[in-house]
Length: 335
Image 1: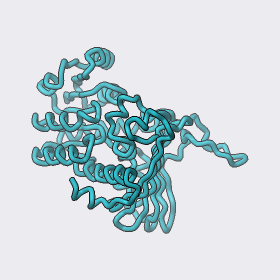
Image 2 (image 1 turned 90 degrees about the vertical axis):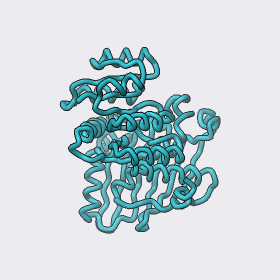
Image 3 (image 1 turned 135 degrees about the horizontal axis):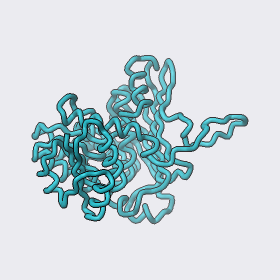
Image 4 (image 1 turned 45 degrees about the horizontal axis):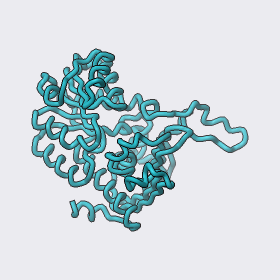
């Protein structure tokens, strides 16, 4: 098949190479707001460059991937579905809740399949965690802990348009908690600290955040995020039940140092980048999208899923700002 890729920054350039290596791919068309980047990536992966989004959408493609800046997602997804093209869009669905609701309605009305990029759904350990919950081998869950600690903050320009740590970073944890447990979040209580860093104080964002999620069956979710974990990129999920406990992310690349005498785990070296920790998941995620384009499978992460995550992120953002628990039904009604 022939796919188009919009946005060739860090994740977009990575996707370009991954797509080129997939057996289902015949050709790739790429574009970026920076013409030099379009040219560089196209030459490197053997793709066809397009001078604009409009040119790409009319280049005879079978589907389109959106990896551009967050504040362009809604517009680009809308343009692609209007053209009748299946879409893969990197998280989040939009920069704020109102825009997410609007684009979700637009997609639903179109009938065009859209897949949102939440790669942890394709990570082998997270898949095993979901299977363990579904089989009942953990008993009744009582606590889920999800962690995302970045080695260093993204660039200032990215942060300014990201929507904040809960909408940009913690959404991966919110989606993982929903997907692995099969439950819905009903209440959020969140906090955060900017650590006095002007990179965050100037945009009203935080460096480090935590959120307590109450699920509809009483299970508690504990989400931890940070923009600065110098030991490496830490992505984990713990599942604690009445019969057993299990975890994803406890491999030798875990960026933690044990203080117990004689303990050699983890052996290292630690993961230092999300493309390192989740490389296999990214490949599986994009391979799944080629099946969505081919019509052989439904979207494994729909706009409805992304909208539920957006409600949680909005509740967390409001909770941190107002220092109170926020019910999901409150933000849903306000939308």
